[in-house]
Length: 133
Image (cartoon, rainbow, N blue to C red; front, side, top):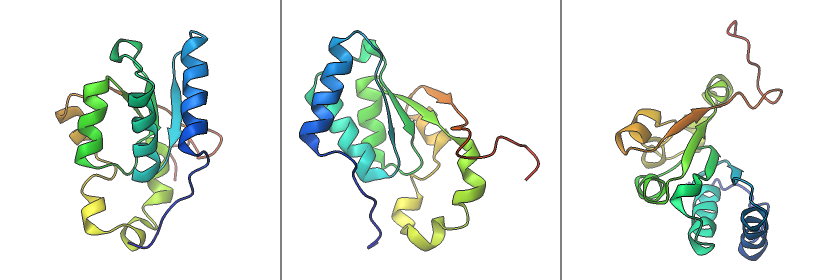
């Protein structure tokens, strides 16, 4: 697919931010939408040697890959999924993602099968939390 997102931070800046958060004693949570963004965050967590015992959190996890999910498990990264995005995202997923990307998109059971811990969030007010769509 030619569709790519925009990385907000370069690797050096992201690593610096993660190190600052970790050195300050906070638990790390990073929002990343898309496999390239998730990979950049996982790379930075590994580079900064954030211990799995610190249970860092990757928020969104809509588009991943088997390799990324495996790395999340190895690093103890918690997947904070956002089910409230599904009604909005389902309008464009098949047009923008290749069939290969779709295999690991919204793959919450796959995360569980890989033994990745999952938390859930609403990301309100970005998406509606109303059950009446």
